[in-house]
Image 1 (tube, helix red, strand yellow):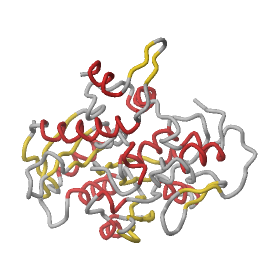
Image 2 (spheres, rainbow, N blue to C red):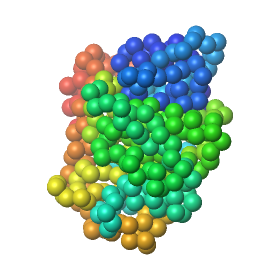
Image 3 (spheres, helix red, strand yellow):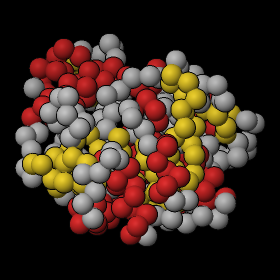
Length: 313
């Protein structure tokens, strides 16, 4: 699917409208876009002549057909509205001195699922800004493993573009849900890019916040990943977390991490109620932000947000 709009439309509809979440999807493969070195926000480098812009079609805030993306990525649509498509959800703990996320990265390198990994290097916390780093082995990855989602707050998808330009293949990425929305759009699009060299995607489940565009996000679990890491729902104050296994590749990496005793399953069928309550609360709030305060028109019918809420409950 391609929309006939370009960088100027992206600028007007997303950047100037405070929808940009600094993911780097628009400028990962497009020479007419770049990002601000201080804020991470995207900007138009020049007035290009493209009528069907890769930048516009890559941005997760221009349009996002979730059922279509799920069908192309997973071969199925979601059953669970809050969590997305998944094969299994486990509660785990690290069995080594390293944390859960690093052990997943380590397992992916050992299996040969990845030869390179895009991670984040935080530049500042106020505002939260991080830039992508491409590492070529698990040892180098260790110091770039994020401790919280805001450690990833920056144009990480440009790291995929950089790795492609450096002729690298089997590229992994550890990113937030918004990054993976943009990457998913690129992967299922009709554009010829280097994004297909991405072989493994880990999502850090997000609590939202940091950029103005965050208040319009409805994906808090990393729905377009191979494995989602979620501390939400696991016992508070513990080192445990939920891992949402979404694909065969994710299952393969998980199995290796368990076999090597990097990770241990503490609960095979964890109670998801707290995680779902958290996700649904955030989704409802941000969905209301998306709709806005104006009336909604559906054919002949016009409703305000409170009336619509009553219909949907």
